[in-house]
Length: 447
Image 1 (cartoon, helix red, strand yellow):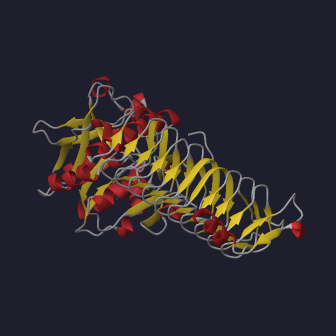
Image 2 (cartoon, rainbow, N blue to C red):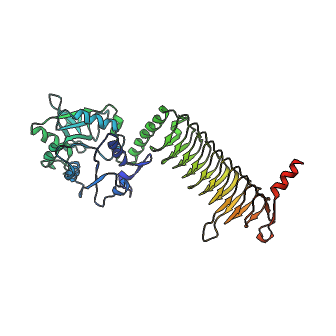
Image 3 (cartoon, rainbow, N blue to C red):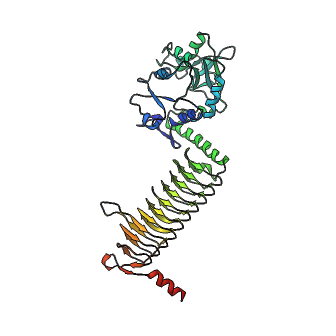
């Protein structure tokens, strides 16, 4: 991979590579999952207690890796061995392999027939169709010319009877050009003990795709994306252009969601029924309710309620909550703030560390000045408040229900409910507050 990051920790559609086969095993019903790690256990933190860890102290081959976990294998176990860099293996395939193995064989190997089997171990079958051995082909000296012509390959996935596996592992030798202990070498040992070795052919050869460099990572990512998008389409979501859409594996889409082109939904993002996301939008760990719209915007760690409108060109940061019917419009940035139901931040505004009530409208270029150079402070804006353009609210400050601000005002003192507050320039001492302004305004409108 030519990377400081271990191969199995490279991200693939929202999961580290190692997490894909782990989740497939869990989905197949595995009662116990063991990951064989390297010294220093670089995988442990990523897997976060979800598996047991065994350590292979030296990289001496696949059989030696399984030996490292031998203390966790019971003789009456059915043991499935997966390669950590086989991310597209499915839970269904693992379950089918288990069922195929249930007839009493010592081992069942998952195989595939490939048009280009280069680099894979080849399956050598006996006259009765059972598996005689697997021949490695990474080095020419390990295989004959005829053996390299075989197109049925070892996928690196096996089912074993626990007792037979433990006995055969003890007899494996490193008699190959690589000087490694190969796991497939247990198969002829088992046959030598009079035991049966079977093969289960994989129908979907894409599940055999392995990752050894970044080019292969790109190929696997393309196939994983195709599968993720197809799953959502079959469940009722519209993906207008799959080639211009990125969906992580943990994304949830309800029925009748529409994803417009050049949109990325990442992490644990969820989108409710009838919502439209995009074009040109990125959502990371965001929750979107029913019937919402997010256009040309960047959203991370935010909650967007039902029938909310976002964008174009909005930036919603972590801790943002937009209640039902709210709006975050053009060139609006909001962070760590709650915008109440039907309240609007239409354009050119920054709202940080604030609470906004219901049915409030913030005029263009309304700013919450939440940082005094040392600490962050909160702003409280009530319901049915109307700020005029170019209003700066210097936190900590509170604006009561039904209050107004004048255009170009710097508000650094609390504004009572129903009042009009404003100031010329930036001098806080010049602020003038008109008590009962909302009531007087309403009375004038009625006469």
